[in-house]
Amino acid sequence: MASTADFRNGLVLKYNGDLHVITEFQHVKPGKGPAFVRTKMRNIKTGKVLDNTFNAGVKIETARVEQRPHQYLFKDDYGFTFMDNETFEQIVLAAEMVPFADLMKEGQGVTILMHAETEQPLTAELPTTVELMVTYTEPGLRGDTATNTLKPATVETGARIQVPLFIEQDTKIRIDTRDYSYVERVK
Image (cartoon, rainbow, N blue to C red; front, side, top):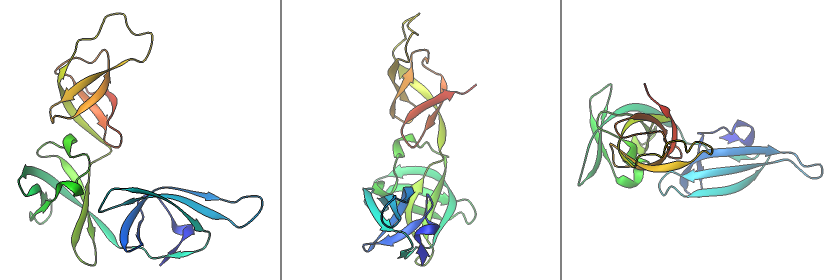
């Protein structure tokens, strides 16, 4: 059991019979009335985001979750296959359990959240940024740099993202996996 004082990003709660991970929280102390905590929680199974408010000091049941390093091997009809970096055991996760799968390439390191009590995999998480090669993009117009203009590009995994005009085909770029945004060119 934990209280609202223990809230942090990434904490996994048992709420309404499902496991939810806290993505955002804010402690609020209004001038009148008791303090409370506003949260945004993502359901681990469905991926839906839930806004909720907890009174300050309320006890919440947490779930023990372990983060284990894995390597992405391949995708087939059964789902995505990952290999544990320590035991070399392979596990298969369904597509719903792998958000941002279109940014993964073979050999990519990922973190798999495992429910510690049942040893059941919950979800796969990519690192915050990944480096991918641009396979197709339209050429940018010279001199069009007065504004931060973006153009569509396709990367080696097939994902489509928005990049600045100066990015050309066969350029390696860094992408933020949380929102598919361009970060920088990789030299």
